[in-house]
Image: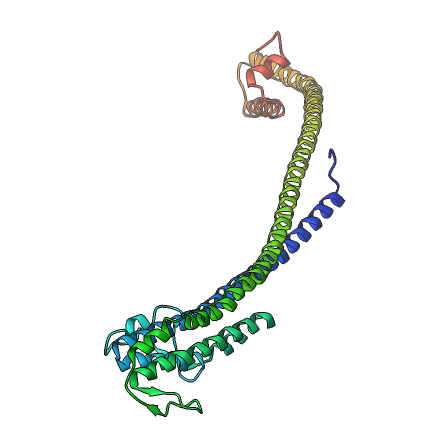
Amino acid sequence: MKNFSPKFYLTTLTLLLGLVLFSVYLFRSIYIQQQELINVEENRYNSYLLTTQLRRSSDELTRLVRTYVATGNPMFEKQFLEVLAIRNGEAPLPVHYDRVYWDFLAIEKSTPPYTLGEPASLLSLMESAGFTEDEFLLMEKAQENSDSLVYLEKIAMNAIKGKYLDENGEYSVTGIPDQRMAIDILHSNEYHNAKISIMEPINQFYETLDQRTKAQVDHAAKQLNFTLNIQIFIFTLTVIAILLLMISAKRYHKKMVLRLNQRVNERTDELNISNRDLKKALAEIKALKEKEKRIIFDATVRSAQHILNNLLNQMQYFKMVADETNAFDDEVNEIYKNTIEEGKELVIKLCSVEELTEENIIGSVYPKNGK
């Protein structure tokens, strides 16, 4: 991993992108599997509630018929018939019927705890819940046995009214109400055996339902765990790929910084060398310039010395003539002034050639004779 080529980065990025896309797919799969697991659990719970509803309806019928036989209150007979009508889909099904309902109506003029919904028989609800054929047969058998038990319960309720069965199975025979007969029927071995015949298929259904739904839950949970493990593995690979990219990017950045620093140092050294060479060249140029200026200046001074000597000779000549004649005429005086002005102009020109004072120039022209 010393050198990270563009191909390495492209491969790693492609792998990372693939892992991210696959991770998104796994997240969706996990969500779907979670929903499936929730649906299985809900189906299991709803199936359990429906089965419990059949068992509780049988228990409610027993409680109501025994209470009616003991009290003779027609309210309990009415509730008994309502329980049968609701179970058979002949009366509206109360909302939340799986909760406590009839216990709140044990007193006269009680208000139902829940509103009424649409009529739906218990068997139709079981069919909609997706019961298997074996499970449905068990529930049908339990309800048939419950209907057989209702036959005994109706005999007991009619005995309280003094009505008895005729040969055709109708309650057309009237007589003295017989409460003892009704109580004996509701507590006889026949009644209890009929009750057991209801509970046996219900209990078998519980076992079958538990096995089926447990297998479904286990299968859904197994698939979910497998997908979660894959997701964890993909997440680990994604983290590793990101770390590789970060490490490689850091090393590449460090390498580029070192290269840039090396280039900067090389360019700095080159500039320093060029600067030294330039300074040297400038110094040489300056020296040549100074030498050239000195040569020009020396030549100018020699020329000026020659001119000034001529002017000085002229001035001395005019001075000698003036001394001999003892006076300056106007022409001689004018020539004398012009000579002095020419000498001053020459000195000023020399000052412009070299930054020297007038005294230095005169000293250069006449190093020994300043006058």
